[in-house]
Image (cartoon, rainbow, N blue to C red; front, side):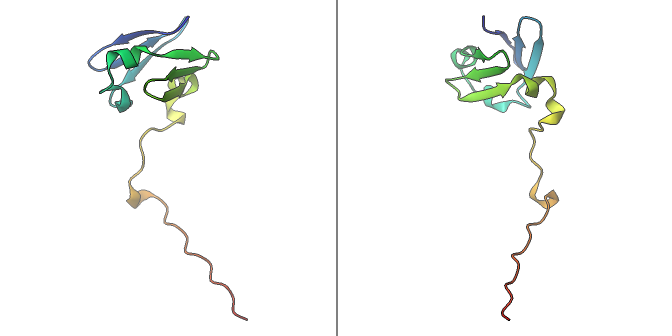
Amino acid sequence: MGPELTITKFGIWICLTDEEFFLPYEEYPFFKEATLNNIYDVELQHQAHLYWPSLDIDLNLAILKTPHCFPLIARPRSTRTKPRSPKKKSTK
């Protein structure tokens, strides 16, 4: 049996047999403009993986259980480490 979904103006509730998750549109923006048919077209695969084939979205349940381990926000370029310059070859 697949997950049960409730769609609100703030995000999507996903209810599995013994767990419930909320996916706010702020953190999962790819669902905000999706059609209802596309959102409801979800499959639970291998008891640990949600897949929306019509949206080509995959979410492992580990991402939903421990979101702090999977940051969704990219750091600005200014805070990234600077790329290393190529090593100069010796001309001896």
